[in-house]
Length: 331
Image (tube, rainbow, N blue to C red; front, side, top):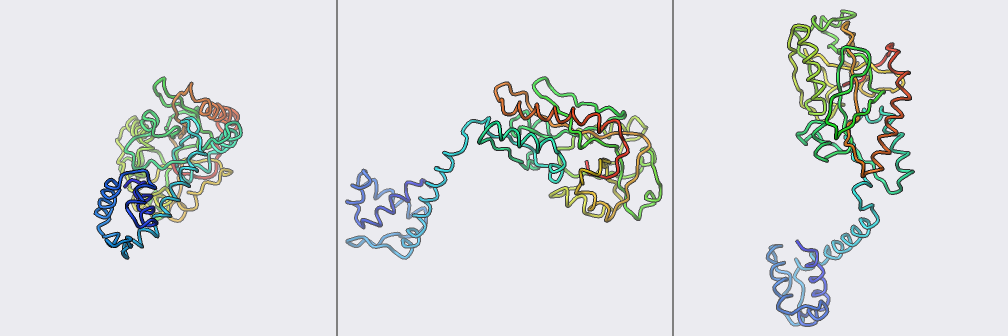
């Protein structure tokens, strides 16, 4: 519905005459009459009694009560929009992976610095669970500026995911850690201090049903296949990570990352209600990466990326050599 119709209606209700209202609106009387008839038909009610001067019906009184607010709200909205940055580069969209966003110190630092350098810059966390795209597709299609890609490798050094030349990946040191499993406390596996992946060949692994961890699943399947079995993976629908990890896993096994306690993973306390964490002797490591396009024409995003890289390099020697981590976060 055109907002102008509310202005025309308000003027007509004030003048109570098509002739004077049309003159005030600088339009013809027949045009105003057609607009009001169409307006009344769209709302499904009669707005004026055909008296001289015109008088509002009860329905017309209701519409008049809200018409002024609708007009003012639009005016305020447009004024507020005028104050916002208009260039695409004045907004950075990041995939919302609550609660892991709180753990990624580099994102928080880069956000603060970028906002200082680029006044008016907005950095927004966007929930894209219903997009139907994986992390790389979301970035390539411009749905998001920064997404998260998670991988598993057999060796200690982080192994960056292969991406097209148009994309860049930046290691997230806070998420680096040993692959471990979470089994239900009443499971026989919970009594074993350590396990091999081959010990779990007949088990059922559970992952939250979203496409953000698609590469993680592919890597896990590859690693298990190299050990002689194809893993049984069940994707569990859940509205959030909090819901997924805060529910008894039944006979399912969580795939988790052991990370440093100082990052205080919120998922840990949820998991430990129902789950025992067990190490994997295979020495597999989980790493996550910020995934984004190369934007030579977006200096604020390149500034953001550069500070993420500096943060990763500053923490590399601290995180990689020491694998004696002591707390748990979900992948």
